[in-house]
Length: 208
Image (cartoon, rainbow, N blue to C red; front, side):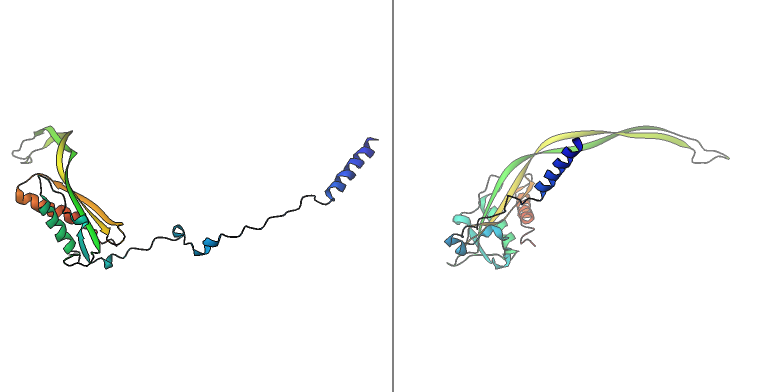
């Protein structure tokens, strides 16, 4: 009896496997694109075009304002240093009513830095031999030497120069860099340090 019941259950299972699947795959069509999609440009789908720095030929101060100065260096000194650095890169100041290619701004500020200096103080001792007849005239010797590092921290005031360039047509920033120099020295030494700091800030312009 049990054998007949097992065969009956097996037959019912096979019949169920051979019955058609009641689930049928179906999908709805995509909705039509909006009418404005054909004329819309998605800028995020494309990389930004590479900037052509060669088309920048002239410049003028942003909003017609000279760079801000300080007690360390006045506005005229900063303006001269920036103008010289731009001139070395083929950028000429605007002298007529035609629009400039670049707007330029610059600022000068004093900041403080923490510096660390390591000093090695050594100590040692030694003993040297003797010389004479039948012996090495320079003698023999031994010794020991060691160092103790001492780290000193001090505060130093530096001058930070920042130069910013903007596309005159779009107003977008195209270059920004800064450099620092020591605030110590005479008037002539500070002027030379200012020119060197501006030159370091502009050293990588135009970018490759």
